[in-house]
Image (cartoon, helix red, strand yellow):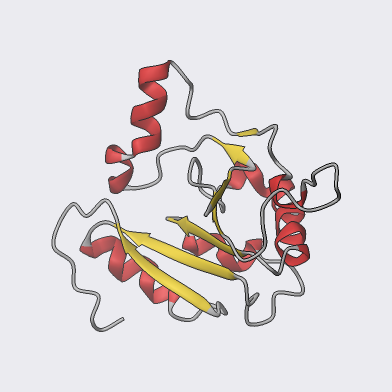
Length: 162
């Protein structure tokens, strides 16, 4: 397992964000979560050791943007580089979660097709309103590996019909 945060920061997007661990942790440390910034570790998946081997070993699951939302608008200029790194590292399995699934189609690379074999997209929902809104979009997107994440769950939800 590896973590990859090409950028950090986020802004509140929906009701579930009230309970976000990122905002809570940043607040304790005096960090402005609303500042979306590219990190020094932006290119982590393709970083190499002196021997030429990749630092992230083949076969690992890479948790992507767990300090941000991969589809946040402020990162649009950097995302293409991330997709390219995910393609280069087809030996890794990338997983990201998003509340911004409505932006997915506008954020995928031209060669996406029906999805990359090594990318799993998790759509997060926190209440019935967001289930109905997001999962109706998510269901029709060209993604090979999908997860539905009920987090933070702030009321009972029914996802069965989706």
